[in-house]
Image 1 (cartoon, rainbow, N blue to C red):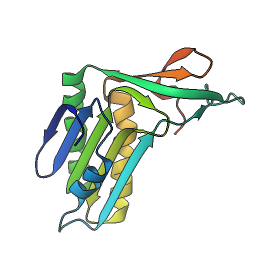
Image 2: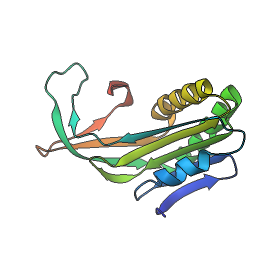
Image 3: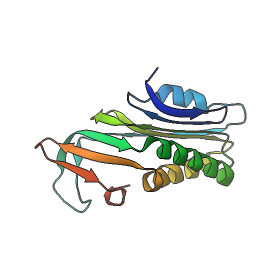
Length: 160
């Protein structure tokens, strides 16, 4: 089980901030329930090659990401997003998990998952949750490149 920095979990919603690898398999199992016919689990990972800004043609090699957050506010905002998604798409189960600290290439930084009665709602709710999480939740990302330079990443400059 991963070290939990902070989390809130009940029968339908699981929000957490972790300083260790995210529990992806546990999240997938959490989303399964008798009323659920569609599960969508998005796992965002640290990619090795990045173009910044998006229009830049030459990619830079990333060696790791570093995430920082104001944890009480971030956890509260994750809970508000889960509640909003449940109202809009009849989400039966929702998990919003984010990594903090250093995340090496190929490891998960964020897990957004929903379980709904039908697939369309699962896709729509997941897309809204990851996009809104990046816009609203106070979690900041610093990218560390192979050439030794570092840069804070603004969500608006990231490709989708």
